[in-house]
Image 1: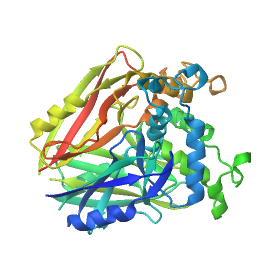
Image 2 (image 1 turned 45 degrees about the vertical axis):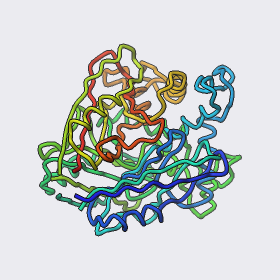
Image 3 (image 1 turned 120 degrees about the horizontal axis):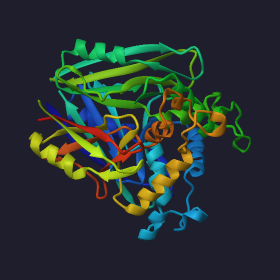
Image 4 (image 1 turned 180 degrees about the vertical axis):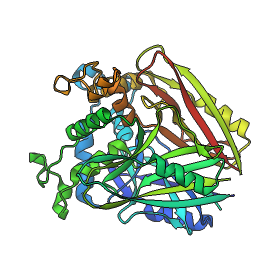
Length: 144
Length: 144
Length: 144
């Protein structure tokens, strides 16, 4: 069994943003030499996501608006006023921990004949919900 | 290490629907000859889900109503009127890309002694949110 | 290829609660002898979740309040009054099947050099949404 590990470092200049990391994952698959296996891609931070969807800017704006509706940013600490108890720990990112749960932590992708085994529109995105600092994504590949 | 790959083609006649694909996955596990391993099952399309829950028709109706509440269908392109920017790309399925994020893209199931290692009520479903055409599900099995 | 399987039994005294199971998963990884591989951790019940986030009590209270907002508990069977069709099957846990979809069924974690390959704050939680009885979590490890 072969295995291969790569980490990516991302720095999203806004609080919320999406980055297509498919080329980085493809590169890691090629470097692994794995022909048949599984590729795990996960955010190593708990206010960020890795997810698969369409590389379409309008959709990404829709996601941002929708996530803001489902879990609004609020730096406050009083739930009765829309704040988050989490922010009492000195953070202002309570919303980001919620947005990440909607979009997910990780994806697992099949590797077939040495390549990501994707449908026609599948692309892998890093989703940032508390940006403006370096964060890491882990790529772990196992197979033969 | 053994590996095995199968794709299923589904055609949901409605826009939204759920299909129990557990028997297909069980068949793939048996064909793989894998005794101990992991089984990835994922939608290959980005307006569909694969998820594990109960095979209970009332629950599925509840899910449809709930997803419609969280991400309503709207063919329009103006977010101020409930539309989706994504629909400016010529689609009317902006809602489906959101519903799929709630229900997830994939499941990973353990294989133990040659069978899906399931709790008492776990069943695997294909979730369609923009149906009326052929779509594919990927089953990838690795193990020994 | 090595494989290892452990189940945990949890009994959450409340209807809803979160339990940090990271030490149990670490113990399973150590017992497996796997140095490089993947570790699947999933709820074996369909009204419970396994997810990765912060071990911070305020955040967990935020999650409970948020999930109650997104999928309120209601023992009734009439959707027009906030009930769930699922409850016509004799259950009162329709809400729990929805909360579990938000928080997810499973996580897949990389194993590197014999340890969970985690970012600085990642911790694995069991999320219970219909507690007060024994439930199981499956840990399945494969690798070399």
